[in-house]
Length: 273
Image (cartoon, rainbow, N blue to C red; front, side, top):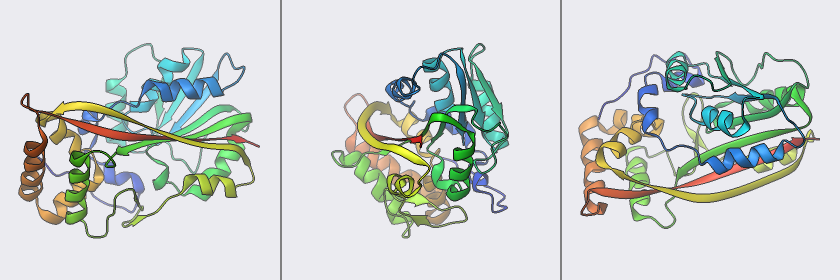
């Protein structure tokens, strides 16, 4: 295992410096999420989508595939390393333009966007400013969507053990809490926030569980893609974290040397009122 160091300048995206190489080991977002969003863009045969905080393009590519070439995906990512990995991982022919940009200032025309989406990123935004921008750029009846997933510990002793290791290393961290830009963690209820914004309507949330069976190499590399694990390494030391994760894997692996890792996916959507 290897810790990534970051030269912090109080910018939320600096936490991801050097993490891009690990994102290839993250699970893909289930295709059904992008297909659901496509069905919500009523009557549109083409148009523009913005994904904010696109990272290495994991969800951008799923969106572009589901929506097809008549929709242009503008994937905004302010971290240079993550954006570089996104461009390298994207096959030629997908209608995606990766650009340097932030959630609080969207450089597009008013009322020009059919779908505005953030995947596992919104907790790091200045959300009041972002909601203001969403009201400005979304077309009439346009869709705002938040997509994310996290280890599902409710029926999995392996996922529970993974989160417990992180909680032990980071006393201020509790599972299902979100990272606060600048440090610390907080409880985030996006559904309640959107309901408090009079500019949005038809607010819905649903969740489902999906799982992957992975070997030690995949698990160890995937763990390093999580900023909470990087912080745990900084707190407890690389050797201690590697030993704890190795023991967890050994306690749960099958005779074939694999474990099942479940995730809960969450999709929250709203329309411009």
